[in-house]
Image (cartoon, rainbow, N blue to C red):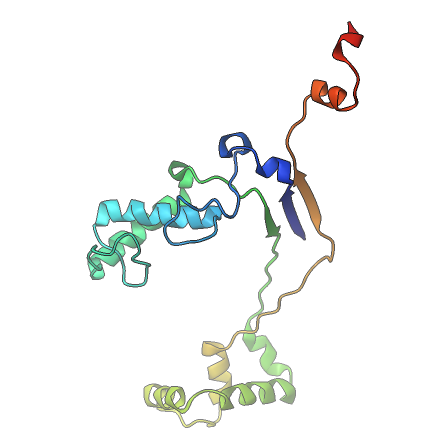
Length: 203
């Protein structure tokens, strides 16, 4: 079920310290992302943390802010992956605030082995054959060279399904969104003043 947190303009005008969260546009502490998210903040924190111990950046990571840093070799990649994951698993030292407004989804996962589908009849096999026909010739040649198998030899489709095919279904359990609104806290005195009642009337 989706859940959403939104904020009012009055809440957004408060300081970051008062809010204890960051707006999307408050991304000045980030190097690689133009919009603030807690996950992006943790990513950059973990990246800097790993660099402090491994003194290199993997080629697959963004280099902004580390333009002159060496690219990791095979040993550096192992080091970086270890310390990066260590910080991701324990991000308390990153001091990354939550987003003031965000939408989250509760997910449920189920799995079924594709071999169970092989008994589904001709329709499913036709689906797989149509999918196979869309693969590039380069991929097909590489597969044949590596496996030594003729394209539509007996058992090829079954083996291909087991090794290379996955069916993903995404369904919404509910069409209802739970929404929470963040607003500036107003004291009782302020509420009374807004009504035009003099405070000395209560003494």
